[in-house]
Image 1 (cartoon, one colour):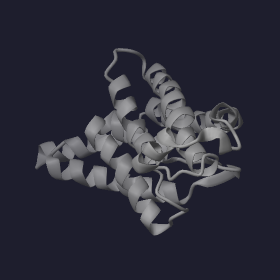
Image 2 (spheres, one colour):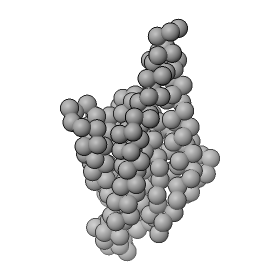
Image 3 (cartoon, rainbow, N blue to C red):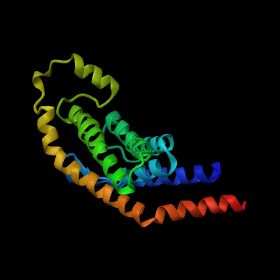
Image 4 (cartoon, rainbow, N blue to C red):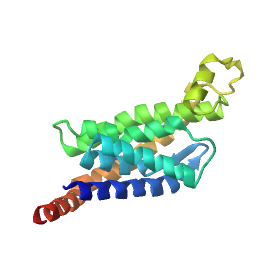
Length: 196
């Protein structure tokens, strides 16, 4: 795939990531269903770690500027950046496609959804600290006796919803990867490159 086509594809995935961020479906409390994970996975599978990181980060950042829902959460931004990176790295393993999608989904569930996302939201809503590097420094030095809900309690409430979120995205990615629809599209773009 030539550089122009690759840039266009990455730009399209970034635009889809922005839309997916804006169309996040609220479930309960701070829990939601977002298809951003699937888009970041596709970016990682077909374009590699760095483009996938850009798709996730830029998609999250621009969506925040279009529709801000409070302070920008740096932990969710890092999580969104890592979705595609993790998938791209796992996709280098010599395993069946669905197994790779499953492994990437489990790692993203633990590291991104239960770890970074939950910690960033907990900092903001329970510890009343801005979800940013400055907020993290403040959290480390502050008196923690005023925190109304511990992290593990907050995580226990979010974990089932996060599992639903990652499962839905993994099913979408697994289904499309297994069907070959995306691969056929990428192959057509490559064939166009060869003819030019």
